[in-house]
Amino acid sequence: MRTLLIEDDRPLGSATREQLVVDGHAVDWAKDLDEARHYASVADYEIILIDVLLPDGNGIDYLREISKRAVSRLVMIMIMTCRDQTSQKVEALDAGADDYMVKPFDLDELSARIRAVARRRGGYMPPICTLGPLSINVAEKHLERDGQRVNLTQREWAVFKYLFHRLGNIVSKSDIEETLYCFGSEIESNTVEVYISRLRKKIGRGLILTERGFGYRLVDTW
Image 1: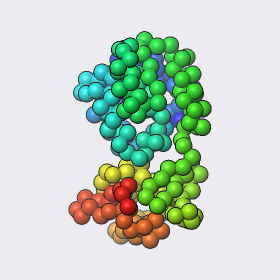
Image 2: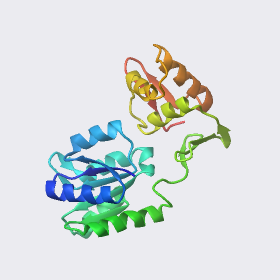
Image 3: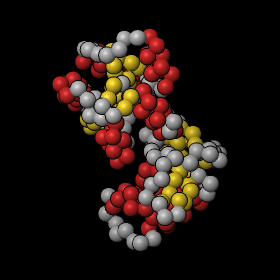
Image 4: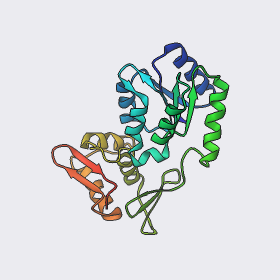
């Protein structure tokens, strides 16, 4: 599973990353929140492990930040901290964490807790997310609008998924073009506009906003 590890302690971070790789995860390791935000802007994660005390901020504040996005429902989030205080555990869980590990912790226990949370969630992703009139099954690439199946081409799905994983944030035209390059076809000057138009017709015009001079934004209001 694609995993983002946010930990500034280099020995612990290195050991944790090694354990996760052995468990079969693909791991990006950020040493601070600025680096974590960069990773999160260019990749989609199924697991995020967050240290609380980081050089440029508080991990629970970052947890609140990402929990505001609908896409956070697709992500398993675990807090790591050296503070074994009930008040902080409650704060982290109320902010959206799935679990809480007190450092120093046994790496085998970390692996077991990740598996346990995955079982409780029925896998790493909930089967269905909702967005306005849409029901979205990311794993199955299945989309419904008001209970009716919406058929998307591979390229349309790629654009929609890219916007969905950045819900509420502006996505530039060039970012969407990069998403389409992997299909090997030539990108024309109006390619992005064409796919945005097709998506609006299929999912509803009110969900994808044009931010003139900046790009496009998928919103969760209807």
